[in-house]
Length: 242
Image (cartoon, rainbow, N blue to C red; front, side):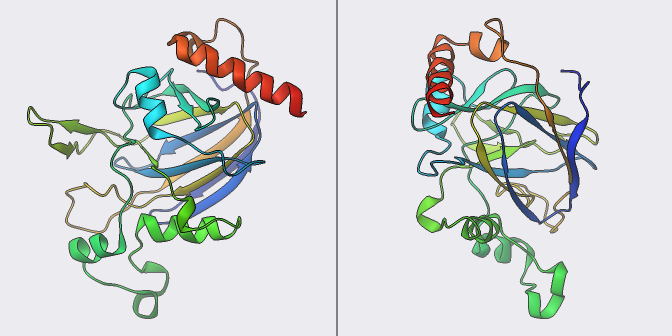
């Protein structure tokens, strides 16, 4: 997908940091892995009705996939589409392994808290998600399975999942187009299965720009018949609400 429209927003997010914003329907978010090896944990909610949120099981079983890639979509638990993947460099993004826990981070990397290390403290994905959710009146009960952009998790013959190092290289990007006004919650902590023994979360660049209108020939709505129905549900929702 070419980006021909002016950027509305641009920001670098360092490794081990968090971010949340509402991004309106009809806009795209491009995430770029600046150094290679990035992992961006993402939660998604309908910004106007936050009880509607990203649903990993429906996203995977409805589209008959195990991992996310272009031109597949991110389905909500209300049968609508929160966002569509419209550009995809790495071609494989995990959404089954969750995020890192504080106990896992301490076990793998040791303990370095804020009192000792200030801004260099070791962060876990779960605690950063909860900090950002708290800003929007959400909490632990609102945590749902997240997406891990840029991370590839491959199964062996026995079904054991392993992280694939080197999957995302410097400059790789993925772009999603929002079909609903969405609350986007991010952290850039390492993937929970990353075998790197050092705490080295990587930075990413975030850019937001206007999307082209969705047509009846859009690859994301045609890739599966379930997506066409979900797109229709989404368009009906937007038509009646706005």
